[in-house]
Image (cartoon, rainbow, N blue to C red):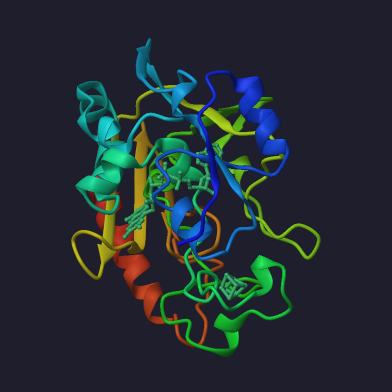
Length: 290
Ligand SMILES: Cc1cc2nc3c(=O)[nH]c(=O)nc-3n(C[C@H](O)[C@H](O)[C@H](O)COP(=O)(O)OP(=O)(O)OC[C@H]3O[C@@H](n4cnc5c(N)ncnc54)[C@H](O)[C@@H]3O)c2cc1C
Ligand code: SF4
């Protein structure tokens, strides 16, 4: 077990300063601590964000604001979310297990690292971790993405798909942006799928209005304690249907409701996921009434 420092500031400026100095932001720690323990992330200190007063769910007019350190379980339990954003409630209920949902936060869920067994191997420094080689492309990538690229890992956040179709915006310590803009492809110069700058962290996520219908459907190897192989969210605003998926690309991905697998050809070992994606997309579309 590696030892590292722990800070729990009550002031956002202090938290940002510690993060700029190289510490890592922590919500519930359910994803972060295993990476630090294995030496995957080069950090000696974590900054627990849960004393910053960023927890809570506020319904305002037609929308909802969810603080970044709100637990995933509180999203699942919130009566107003269940009533007006059923797809978001379903996505919260799909995360891991009851224990992970109690500990895991909304900010941590949206900012968790991609899934790839090579990325999380303590002895391999793959391309996304700053190395030269994408081991998945020359090795086993049965559960990876459907599009070619430098990194073929998958985005795992159930909440991200459900929030994308609701046109959610995220608020950080320095700016506000559509949730979709929080994610970007990693490049040779910047090996990260998040746009956050050093010291910047999520403070809240806001959904502007409730859809007429919404849903979230997944297929996984088990009902609990495992990530979705593919997860599809759908929301309908009048006649307009929005769809998004996780498990198919290393970013949460908006889908064309008329052609959900467009641009996702599948790789040597992942073509099977196309049929899964199309089936789930068809189920999700039917569930929102189109
Ligand atoms: C066995 C297992 C199964 C899982 N299954 C699922 C699943 O089915 N679906 C799913 O979506 N997730 C799953 N997870 C992943 C994870 O546990 C959850 O997503 C959880 O919600 C992460 O939240 P956290 O607060 O614990 O994140 P942390 O571990 O605290 O942080 C995760 C990452 O986000 C960063 N971070 C945390 N908070 C912020 C913030 N406010 N601003 C910016 N960056 C931040 C951290 O620095 C870290 O890089 C699973 C994890 C395990 C171990
Ligand atoms: S898919 Fe991405 S995370 Fe996995 S080995 Fe390749 S570069 Fe690394």
